[in-house]
Image 1 (cartoon, rainbow, N blue to C red):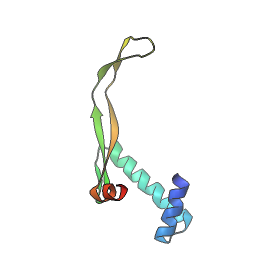
Image 2 (spheres, rainbow, N blue to C red; image 1 turned 135 degrees about the vertical axis):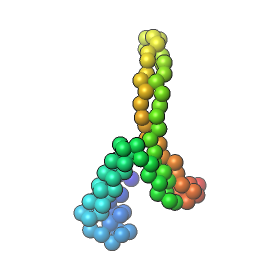
Image 3 (cartoon, one colour; image 1 turned 90 degrees about the vertical axis):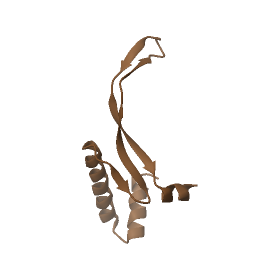
Image 4 (tube, rainbow, N blue to C red; image 1 turned 60 degrees about the vertical axis):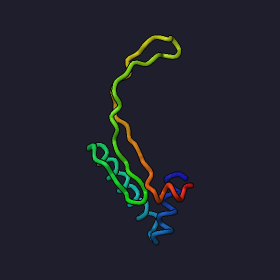
Length: 90
């Protein structure tokens, strides 16, 4: 499913026009992005939780040259599925 398919599904299930559904989806994505950028955690009961994880710097190996390289610290986004979502998927 891509973004267009998701907009169509939202419009159908919520009884909205496709333009309103697209605006709602864009606003939702922007709100989640802004919250994660501010290091906030987003918990959607029944669906799941988005959070930011800190990954420490570490030493790796370049597979092409076999030389050791330093991989810098970074942040990544984590998603943990809620119980209801996990039950529906299984």
